[in-house]
Length: 245
Image (cartoon, rainbow, N blue to C red):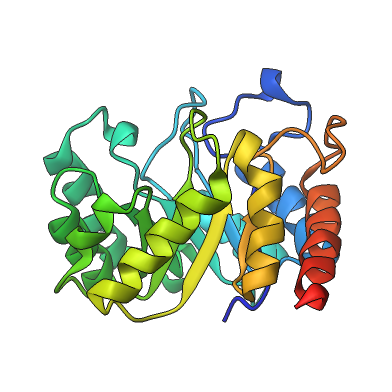
């Protein structure tokens, strides 16, 4: 169970974006080790192929991180962009996870509810023995969750044009409540929305996430040192916000 924080190690970032962005399995394992030591309770990563492109061939990256952080849940993305928008190919790649040995199979995978064939993708993830984290980016998208079994809901404010990240997050939370969608929730934002939502998650008592996928700066606006430093800082920000309540 994630009580406070998950680390998101790399996302779609390239090494040129920040010197601490991990790409290879060994780099991901090293970054995860530092982040978990700093307090992260779960790891989210985007595996890469030999060219550095994101891939759904997740075994090597998951195994490396699992070996370096035994007992820590490891999750991956199923973003449709990874297969170039091909929903059928995405399903094929995910179905292949069922044949992976346990140490190479992720514990969880995020599936964005607004993407094509969300229900089919969520079902494929579950059939592979992997928990489903449903990514909800807008209040309108929340309605897609009806009748689709998921294990965790990710409220994600990723639109840089959102002027009030907290209000946008509250709208999604309210919509989920009105629809009667139950289950664990995690709240986070990207770029400008990242740090305000770390604080908001603390105030609401919801877990959050942090890492170089979501932001390249710390809470002061200075360049982030690495994933581990972001985790330490986010835990402090989250905890202080939670104490206000």
